[in-house]
Every structure is written in structure tokens, then in C-alpha cells.
Image 1 (cartoon, protein in one colour):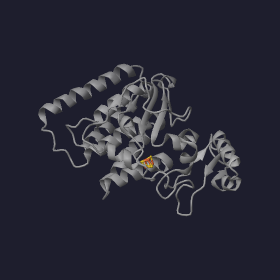
Image 2: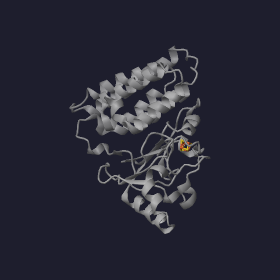
Image 3: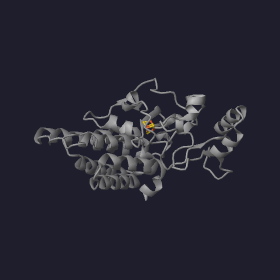
Length: 301
Ligand code: SF4
């Protein structure tokens, strides 16, 4: 299952992701693979400069990281935005981060689900369209994924009874429907989503939660149907497709499941305020997405 942009994405070799402030980390297997490559070609010194062991200071699965050039770009980035390691040893030789970005794979009870990072300019360009994002259900993945390199693990059946997150997939579908309901301006859709999420959160510990969730969804759909009859659809705002697609993709990354209702609503509100006050919406989306990928806790406070 993946958002349809995954089918259309191809790297434009702009080098943006290779010049970001993030540290590209790797596991020990990748570190040893590179050690063997550089040793075999008599470049032990370069290996020691380019691959910095973390000596146990990294997080889970982080054994080493790739050094930067003086200007901040990746050690292996050349002047024409080519990756020298890719050129020399092929895509399959790269570490999981470089092989996966900008894809964002998640391991879920429905199977592997994938969206993309809007911090990549090529993704942003694809997402800047009037057409709503589609969630594609398919047995076949749009790319070969690196095993066990998932950004999230989503198993709603492991949630306690009477907890809304036990019904996470139903909630996600409903929330996406609300975000994509174009009878309302996006600000109103986000407010409606927030009200609905608060109502859902209020059902914790309710023995009849399943029935009440269904009733809530049906009430919302009835209300939206009635709205569609009475309200003249607003003129589409410039760039609104990109904004809607950004929030849908963000929701598909499942922050409601991972961080809960209150934190996620604060996150959405924070992002919306930033975007509304921005001179350049596309750049702000890229920045927020980058922050979500690499300094999430600051956004979730
Ligand atoms: S930012 Fe996107 S398009 Fe640019 S090099 Fe990275 S993956 Fe490719």
C-alpha cells in the first residue's frame, strides 16, 4: 500500500538530500562492506576519513556515519551531484538511508506501506498538483526496499481494548476523507479533523467504542453530504493541492498512532501556523518535513 506519487518518483540528482545537515548513519554490515571495498582498492586512509565509527554512541542499528566535505555536502558527492560511491559500487552497495530516501516505508498489520518525504524537491514538484493523493493498494511494491528498515511499526490489534487506536486503520481512512473534502477550505478541514480527533479520543475506555466510532463517522459523512448540497464550492486557492497532499502524506505517516491524538493535533496546528505565515510555502513545507524526519521531538513539544 503506498501513495501514488511513489510510482512516479525518480531521483532528479539535485543533491539537496546529500547537502542536508543530517548525519547519514549506517549499521555495522554496511560499514564492513565499505571497509572491504576501500581496503581492496588500497584506500584505507580515505575509508578512515569518510566513515566515522560511533563507538557505541549511536542509536539502534547506528554503527558509523559518513563524514561531510568542508562545504557541508556528503563526502561522496561530486560537483555534478553524482554519488561517487554509487558510481563505483552500485546502488545495492549503499547504506539503507541512501537506498531508501525519500521513500518512507512503514511495517504495518496491512503490509508494507510507503509514502515519500516532502523534503525532496522532486517529491514536492510531483505533489504540487490539483489531483488528490491516491492510496494505492497493491501486492507489488513500487521499489525494492531494504529489509527491516522501517520508519514505524503499526499493529493496532496490539492496542488495549476500548482504545481508539485499536481502530487505527478505520480512523486513518476517515481522517484522510476529511482532509480531502474540498467543499471546505483547508483551514476548515483541519479544524473539522481536530474536532473529530478530540471526539474520538474522548471515547477511550468506552465499552461501546466500536459502535460509537461508526456512528461518529456516519454523522460526519452525512454532514459533509449536506454541506456539498448547500455550499457553493470555494474557488480553489493557489497551491492548495500541494498543501492538502502534504497533510495527507503526513497523516499517512501515522503520527496519530505513534504520538497520540493531542501531540499530533498540536503538530498539525504548529505546521499550519508556520505555513500560513510563510512567504514561500514550498520551502516551508520542505523545512517542516525535514524537521519531522530529523528533529521530530522539537515539533512535538
Ligand atoms: S533531494 Fe530528491 S531528487 Fe534531489 S538528490 Fe535527493 S532524492 Fe534525488
